[in-house]
Amino acid sequence: MLTGKCIVIGITGGIAAYKVPDLVSRLVKAGADVHVVMTGAATKFITPLTLQTISRNPVTCGMFEIPDKWDVKHISLADKADLLAVVPATANIIGKVSAGIADDLLSAVIMATKAPVLFVPAMNVHMYENPILQDNVRKLEGYGYRFVEPDRGRLACGYEGKGRLPGIDVIFDDITGILKKTGDLAGKTFLITAGPTREYLDPVRFLTNGSTGKMGYAIAGAAHSRGARVILVSGPVNIPAPKGVEHIPVMSAREMFAAVKEHYQEADIVVKAAAVADYSPKETSPVKMKKGPGDLEVVFERTPDILQYLGENKDKQVLVGFAAETDNLVENAARKIKSKNLDLIVANDITQPGAGFGTDTNIVKLIYRDGRIEQLDKMAKEEVAHRILDRLIAMF
Ligand code: CTP
Image (cartoon, rainbow, N blue to C red; front, side, top):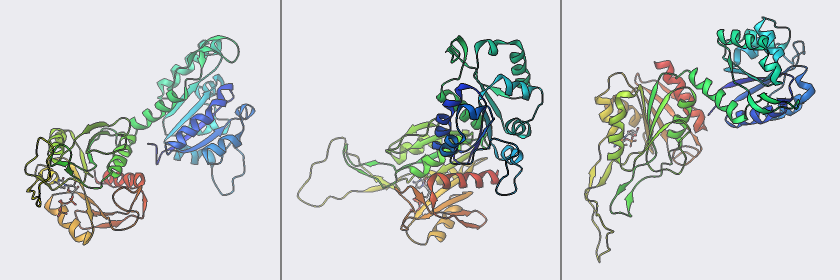
């Protein structure tokens, strides 16, 4: 969900600092590259070693630490951040930023970054209600800084009131929500097909293929995490749809065709990762078929070629096809790009180990309309998904 995202977490000196490793762990598990900056006061509540172990990155605490190699830390962190979150944010850090003070590493990174900054205040209720703090919050909001409201409840100092750090789930959702809105695919609509289709012979028997939907689902998740609206039309698979995508389950090639046609006009980009059956039994028995003494002959008829239809009816859409081949990969893919009027085709030789159906990795060639071919190394399907999206952005 957060693969490719760099998140800087600033920790300041409040007791809620002890909850931050949980947040960092969630972000790392979601694929983010997390860098932690701690103020001196924060290190009194929790150790840098804890955060370093969980974030899997060096933790920086001081402006004047001597790095192993040349690096102007406050600028390099500020530049590489896709988002900076200050958790917990004390009255002190909010006051300093509001006054334009940058006298330690964290306040300097906040000052230098162009990335969205999210403050998650946690403090005593009277400190939170203090009009100076409230003025500072309003001033910073006016400059585009974002705040998460603290929760009400019992505070570490013994008081009851507003000032508790919100739940880690809430902070996590706020972070992913901001990244989505500011993502490089914000405002774009993706129509993605994934998985196999099932062509029924009778109520219990069907023709299908080994597609598991992993590649299409990885593209759907990646596009959603980068801010796109995603409509995912999927054949029957055993994996859950990525959170936040509009999931339309279908069974047969004909049902997939109907769903795709219905949403085609809304789409800016169509990615056809589904392995669609080219043939379907001409007759489907409404009751379970009984065996007879001799052979069974079944007549199959062609299913609609969905991508062909999209290519013929294309106006603004960027069309991406997939080609799973066992031989003559490049020739077959190049033929399909022309015949189906595509912009890009993702071709994989399904005979190679680590490529194709059911695996977590893929080895693909990206074949462009102008004949260019780009070979990607063997990599996780999520990473292939992000590479494809990078190339699509370059095409817009
Ligand atoms: N495709 C489709 N509708 C079909 C068949 C395929 O939209 N009825 C799409 C697939 O989703 C994929 C692309 O076409 O993006 C290529 O699929 P593939 O089965 O490899 O190619 P075909 O066009 O069926 O060609 P061939 O049978 O010659 O391999």
